[in-house]
Image (spheres, each protein chain N blue to C red):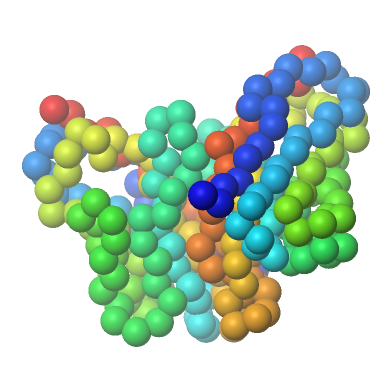
Length: 115
Length: 117
């Protein structure tokens, strides 16, 4: 089964700083990749997804992610964070090429943005 | 608007009791999932279903069961609640890609916080 690794447990940034959250997955075949965000006390919402095509994916609220197949990575980026980006971020993957259709989530990265 | 609702939102129960968490979606999605969220573990898959009468075990299925008698509902039952099952439970649904079980974007419910004393 595929697995997902998120490198940072907790990231603390000042407003306007740039953000990059790491995500690596374990499966070498065809994958679908997702980033979800969970604001305090809320459920998970989709930020962006990659199924195929342009490896640079743009999502909501100014977030983007780049799929680098050779590195098995799907890092999330934002050029300038705001206090309202304080949340927990989850990377997720499924591997239809392996017959594994359900999503596997990383353990999450908590982002705290200081005003 | 289509949505996915969970009930109850909060539940406190005692060890050994049976508990059922309800999940109802109006997206008409074939795929439904139950995850639990715990500090340090992220989301872990408990059970999932790709359609009516279909159920499958996930990563942490011991002590849990589900049934799928219609498209809209996937109730999660804890047969004999244990303190280790204290958690926040999320139900999710998705449509299939290409007519098969390949799941697209998950739509999540608001979560059910369960405390087992």
